[in-house]
Length: 279
Length: 276
Image (cartoon, rainbow over all chains, first blue to last red; front, side, top):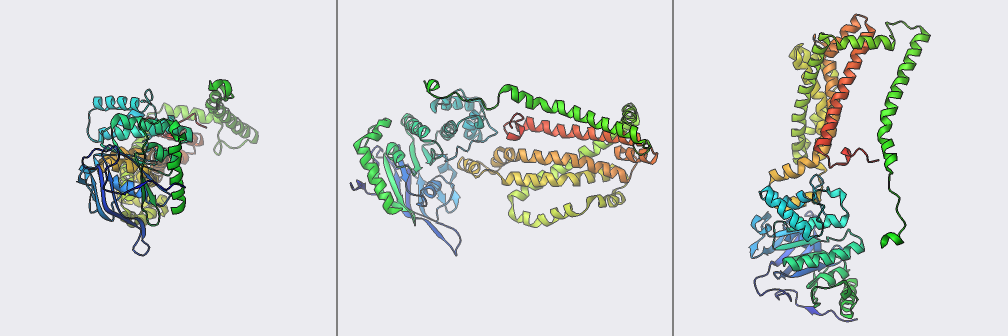
């Protein structure tokens, strides 16, 4: 078994990143859940940097704290201790979210979480509506984004009229609508079938290349991780912590056939081996 | 092409069958009603029962037509409608308002719940004489009874609705930096609306019952009073006519709320009529 081409877990710009400040920086970020009698150590003190424009995948078995980590970066749950900054602005002051830092984050969840009482275009434009944008601007943006994610023509439909894959496309469009610099995705394609998933991976790659966002994506699929990532952060459980960081060298845009290449198989195989050791 | 290799799928519900399902109640309801009237008529004719106990359908029909042309009946109808609407309005205000608060503030739920349940387990009809003593024979006591009866289903459904809000939807609003008001206006209210309307459907019917029972027991106005006066005059056919009148009124109110459902929540499953 080939050893993982491990790189230092932190303090190194990602392969495609610019030399500028990292988009996301974690310093000794730690998370405990539960009561004082029965505390659960969800994430051990963790250092991590995500370079601007980078595509980082958090990979790991269930219970490794990858979703906890992403939800802390997304401003949904406060870290117990440590410092978390987004584009050089602190995201948390104690348990208080700093809304200027959150404004640079767009989240996509495992479920599309579209509001069933809004049409697709209203869902896509919801963030703009909350920020007080006018109707014309919202409509124009919704049209532009539905086209970008490949659901043009469905703007006036209800979410329930769309397939799971199309709903997830709409959720991505919604996260892009206010043009955040960073896209956080929590197993966004986990509920989709394998064929749709492949298509969505290709789609996400082209959206990423077109928009040059920083992406942090959580998955438990090794293939998805190796296909999408510049850099894979492998987490191990109990307590969750960074185990290995792997850079993925394939040129972009990647086609699905890259998955058949020997190098892809080597990386995927090494990750699979390491995952079986730590789970 | 996929079409050439894959077997063609049967459409889930052929249009003709769905049409049939939609039209069925329009046929069965009149037929069953006609059957009921026929049995009623047959029983009266064959048993020779006194018209004071059970009048013929024809007598009831005539009494109802007379009712429709009587100004007094319409004045009484207006009174009952007014009491129902005003009582229902206050039940909505208190039920939805308190429901939203209870669902959002756990300590309030614990504090208020015993009293809310108490208002329900007290036999409310037994309170009617008390209300008449307190608020007189006028419409205030009836409005109050209508409101108290309608309030509970509206409250419980509002609480349920606000509590059933999807966690994922909440995450979306939080990650978008939404304010508390925006979360209420854009998420909690629309999300709870189908539940609230269900509470309203039950509540409006209870409000009519409350108004009528109130009129029954005291006062000189309303359909409940009309009913009692017909009974005291031994006009059994007139009594039936008032009952028909009340039933139609109930239907109209109920359909009004149902129509509201289709207008306000066209996206929700409960507004989809052709789903099996």
